[in-house]
Image (cartoon, rainbow, N blue to C red):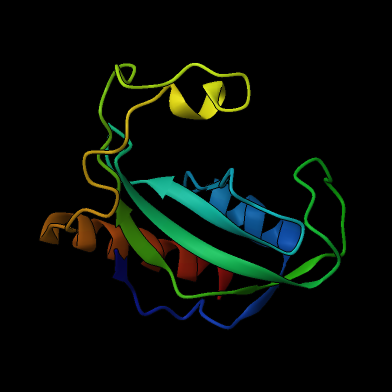
Length: 136
């Protein structure tokens, strides 16, 4: 993981405005959101193993991915780049059981937090500057 300096950090935005502007750059609301926090994610490579993430916390209201008109306000956190190399296919050692079948059917990642090569750091900085120009 590589943390990036950004003009976005600690800035407060209307959630819908930030979401709409970041979607123009290919960001999506990451699947790991909760009602009080989330992340805007954008893959930096075609294989979707290197990601630029911009975390945020709710300052007002609650996050709901289905709401189109809300007064929710968010505070941006420190953006970072994450590399997640995954194995392909099913895990031969996975145990089939009712409570864990959906979790255990896939292999553990090769590298959960791989080293970020310079080209990905540069690409992330470029995308982040575009995001800053839209929001700040």
